[in-house]
Length: 154
Image (cartoon, rainbow, N blue to C red):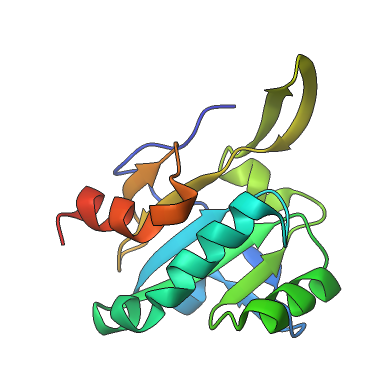
């Protein structure tokens, strides 16, 4: 499955966050959103990415951007991940892979010669009107904030 393109309308999503609250695309109408997809809580790359976004969270809020992460992990896993690293943003649990499939980030991956299905780490920047402003398909987990700033010319 291919990633969505700039200018496309962001697919509607609705998911449950770490606290069991429903979060949907509609919650971000009139707001900018950094919607990032990652494979698994508390793994080296995913932790680096989450912590990099979290370390710059106040800057993102100051620039009018909200941050939401999505993975197939459970609500309980998200709670532990947030607690361990002091994350300030919502993580949505997508165990049924509905959101992952809608955004084209659930697909075939290869590692050490083995093929399997998994999350294709990527980020969508969604504007106030619900359109995809930018797509990052190759994520630099340790400097994701810098990567987004460069893409958006901020």
